[in-house]
Image (tube, rainbow, N blue to C red):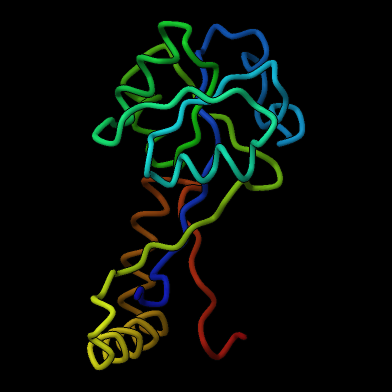
Length: 168
């Protein structure tokens, strides 16, 4: 099982910086890219495969093998084998900073906001309960606010804080 999320990460698309379809866009609508004119890179068995198949069902798919990574996805873009790949904004920020001739574009509304969680063996019920309680307490703690403030400055718009339990 998985714990309650400690934070949520925003996902968008990464494309070639010289692709005229994305060049001047600050954001893009999902409906603009969900068509057969686009090829999306996906890593087999990865969350990117789920994004490609569920959120972008009408695009062409270019599958990379299981042990591939974001660098392989960038190479697929630069070689012209694909047009976009789905990635969290933190990866987009890192790639933009290295100047690899690719850019991150947020999808509006957000393509996916997925939780940063801790995985626990399915037989470890007590551990999962302990961790969930710890996460709930931590989210309501001033230390969490200090930590998240630092990360949110480093990675603007990449991380979203879960609601505090008393704010629900």
